[in-house]
Amino acid sequence: MESREKVVEIRNLEKSFGDLDVLKGVDLDLFREENLVVLGKSGSGKSVLIKIMVGLLKQDSGSMKVFGQEVAKLGKKELNELRLKIGFSFQNSALYDSMTVKENMEFPLVRNEKNLSRKEINMRIEELLDSVGLPQTINQMPSELSGGQKKRIGVARTLILKPEIMLYDEPTAGLDPITCRDINSLILEVRERYKTSSIVITHDLACAKQTGDRMAVLLDGQFKAVGTFEEVFPEATDERIKSFYDYNFINS
Image (cartoon, rainbow, N blue to C red; front, side, top):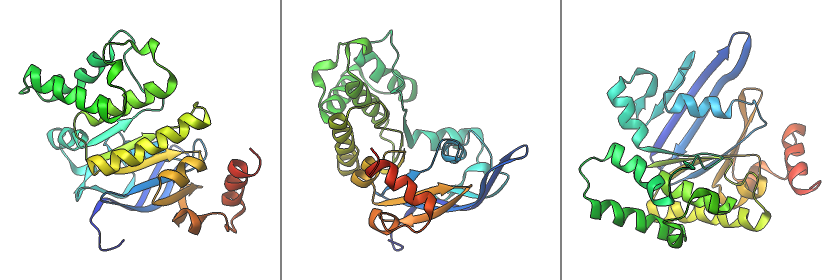
């Protein structure tokens, strides 16, 4: 793994809000074409980490490099260019209710790639809807879609700008087990087809096990365990990591 290119490199990252220390010296790497799962309870700092990665927050100390660039030192233009390389798949799919699927897909494209012809726009939308298995939804409204379909369309819309890094925020939240497996398979297909590097933020260990090359468990502001699923679970000696496993696989 070490010989592979690092697309994200985090070193000794610290972030506090008043008296609340959220990140306490975090170290982590994301390698090219890797799916890295970040696990942690609500409020553990997962979203803070992501916001620092895309320049929405600045760390107090330490380093956050994306594609070799220190994010905190980027100017507005460079930051916008970086953000176009990072796709964010939101937990609630973030589709505009008043727009059709096609209009939802088109929206980021016409804002960011002004030189595309109508034919090129239509081709890219059709290709991506096809890649998530939903070409028939092109003229539907979000209200006509199931939860799983909305997730898929949300992923397709994120991919429309051809990001190099995908960030998935709780991709299986609120979905039934069969649809969860479908979304997990889609995350793997996206990596295979579009050669993305991904960070998957989840509480769902079944999702983590199916999609992740490595797991990183965030507890008390630090990554307490990083490795493959088998390395982190189920032989964990740390009670907090063990309880994570038990909750997902034994008690549910």
